[in-house]
Image 1 (tube, helix red, strand yellow):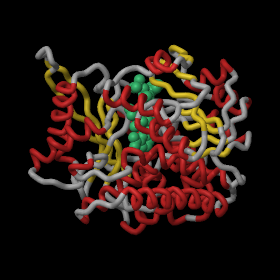
Image 2 (spheres, helix red, strand yellow; image 1 turned 45 degrees about the horizontal axis):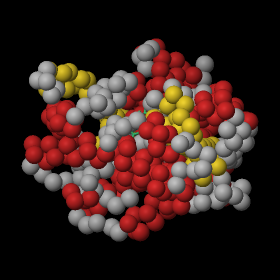
Image 3 (cartoon, helix red, strand yellow; image 1 turned 30 degrees about the horizontal axis):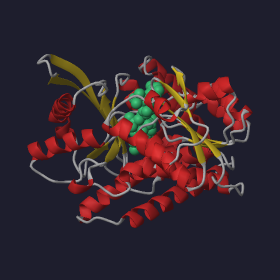
Image 4 (cartoon, protein in one colour; image 1 turned 90 degrees about the horizontal axis):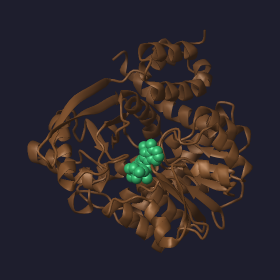
Amino acid sequence: MSLINELIDKVKKQDPEQKEFHQAVREVLETLEPTINKHPEFVKAGIYERIIEPDRTIIFRVPWLDDKGNVQINRGFRVQFNNAIGPYKGGLRFHPSVNLGIIKFLGFEQIFKNSLTTLPMGGAKGGSDFDPKGKSDMEVMKFCQSFMRELFRHIGADCDVPAGDIGVGGREIGFLYGYYKKIRNEHTGVLTGKGLPYGGSLVRPEATGYGATYFAAEMLATRGQDLKGKTVAVSGSGNVAQYTIEKVNELGGKVITVSDSNGTIVDEKGIDASKLKYIIDLKEIRRGRIKEYAEKYGAKYFDGLSVWDVIRKENLKVEVAFPSATQNEIDDKNAQALVNNGCFCVSEGANMPSTPNAVRIFQDNNVLYGPGKAANAGGVSTSGLEMSQNSMRLLWSREEVDSRLRGIMKSIHSSCLDASDYYGKKGDYVMGANIAGFVKVARAMLAYGIV
Ligand code: NDP
């Protein structure tokens, strides 16, 4: 049995219930096969075995009082996966589905993503099974404070720097950072995604969506194309989806879908700037359901269906897709439907939104397929830029941050292409992203000896 298969078997046996983690390990390790022959020193030093085992896993109780005075208990997680090339870095997810397997998958992916950004950041992820939906601001604050009451001892500006993810936006980061500052008595870059008045970076809220769009633009350019006039599908209606829509509009594309966990909107006229403003207010301020968009603008609403289900059932024509909601949202049936309906470019705003079979269908059909760890790396890259600004105690202009972000996305795109070419599968962004991210981390681990 090959080393790669042995390791995939090992993670399955060790933690049989961690399905998403198995999926991420398989997807990465299978594409690392060509590095085994080229780098026998990595095999000898046990790099492949070591990289799939987190440095440390922290699981903790989060008790808090709801508005009725009842005690509520949630579970908190922080998986510090690998800090070979920089402090641990990765978001916090608050969602009822959160469990150790999901946090490990996200933390593992983060190692390679962060390495690709060219910035010095290790990989980590955390979160809780707490559901902010339907909770009052006071309840969210109490939960965040209790979560930080434990997390603070494990993080630090030079040790581990969390950020947002699903369910953790500006409001939650404010509560988390405020409490950290209070109990540590220090104002430091320990979280990113902070508000502008207290150490945030311009363009950080927009960065993941903008970055995924820049990445799509780079992929399209390899075929002499751009986003102008293209019909675009976006899923989700949260942070990543919102700023993907903004940037696609700016580059001349027409976005016709958005969704949330209850259903999907199809607006064939396109979601323009004023409709997007409505979505941002609906989701960030009023915390309502996307269905309300249909009522306001007379668009179609499909209850209980994802964007990709709707494209399949309604045979919607789209050329470019930005899955921006959650993992495994596109399965093989829906991937095939996308291809059949003319989609030739997929740039993943979400982490691992396409199942392995869906990825195969995209690749077999010559779709320009940008995997999340490359395409959505703009968010963490700009978090890295926020850390730099915090260390220097200064604030870069919007133009400066955006042009650095654009430069980083360009460089990630070319690293993917260069690595896929060097290791014999030119144009395979999955292999390119995994190998380019891996080799840098592996070299650092090698330098440290067995630690
Ligand atoms: P938000 O919480 O802001 O938005 C998530 C959106 O996806 C919401 O519309 C939500 O619907 C929907 N959604 C969440 N879970 C599900 C589900 N199980 N089924 C259907 N819809 C769902 O999160 P983000 O926009 O920040 O994150 C979206 C994706 O992007 C995630 O995969 C995240 O890991 C990834 N990502 C985010 C980065 C960032 O900077 N924020 C950076 C890199 C990747 P509802 O409103 O009903 O909850």
